Length: 181
Image 1: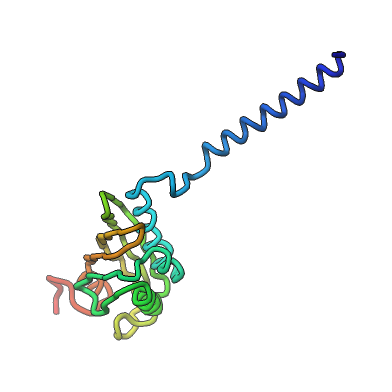
Image 2 (image 1 turned 60 degrees about the horizontal axis):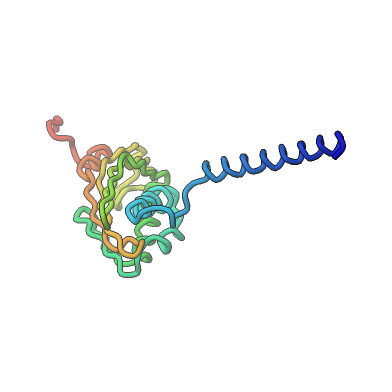
């Protein structure tokens, strides 16, 4: 080999090495595909999508992806029953009509087996009237906990506990305890 051929071979080897190293870093930095995660991790992703994509952004298509056709909602503070993704979509649309800037911030999530527990804070501004009452223009901040049960990667049941009393007090619909009447 001539000196020129050796230099070309060396340059080629360097380019190939850089490409391999770059590809290796790209693979290391890429998010894990769902098939590489445990069932509990996949369930947490779906529970987060429930809060962030479905409820906060109003992306109704997400309901069909994460909610089982036989889903049942257990929510003693809410007068609207829900069975299946279509009922959930109806409630999301109704809530987002009442509170257009509705947003959920997930504060913590715990998963074990087929269950995910999400502690979150919901915020919104009452610009259209809440639950049939006149709009107040007031902002609300409501703490809540939701428990999800999964089967085959989809939500089949959920239980919610929110500070609905605190929400009504923040909106001025009922007086605060110890408030002067």
